[in-house]
Length: 143
Image (cartoon, rainbow, N blue to C red; front, side, top):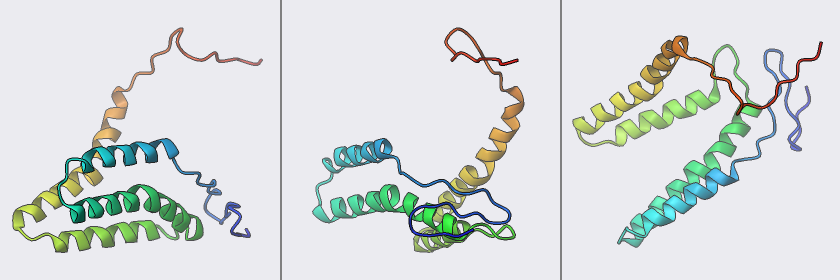
């Protein structure tokens, strides 16, 4: 039940311990590679700097921060600090949008990504087929 800074998982009454977050170096490198390719097309230094800053925030700092928040403040009674932070960022992004079309597009995209896509995936699970063959790993049955 004790939590220290060494990465030891926290055990709570309702949750399993969270494993130590090691990050995804391959995906992080791929994100930075794509960023460098996209920045080579941008003419303004200020826009390039803003783009790199947002990429570093989204792909380097956010996953680690989210993991640490979830590790130190687990869900209690259905409330998640990560959900609250995501909701606050979404509302602030919505408020920063200028035109009505941008706001409608933002809300539509949020509804599609956060509501319709998971429901569609859940509904399509009934049609899932597991295909096995020679290409699979060997499964050893111990009797």
